[in-house]
View 1 (cartoon, rainbow, N blue to C red):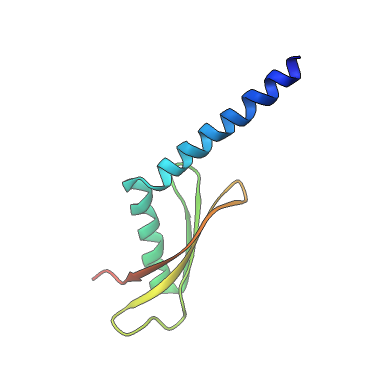
View 2: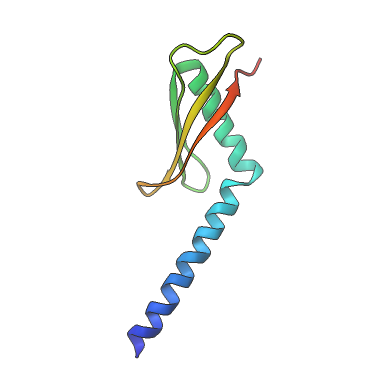
Length: 95
């Protein structure tokens, strides 16, 4: 009986953590951090960083950034080696 109760509680706890992570990744602070890493990718071709919540942000831009300093940048967000989000972001170099 004890194992059955734990089996029901653990998925619920994991679900709460996932919701918390999604809330963080959508927050202004997380997006600001991601945007800084994206800007570095536009300059250097790729970049990475670990945000305040422990998410690793890995970005990759084409080697030749389009006219006007804009390009589609691949952004891979992971935590504990698990990919949490993969997206393409259209960004332009900040002046």
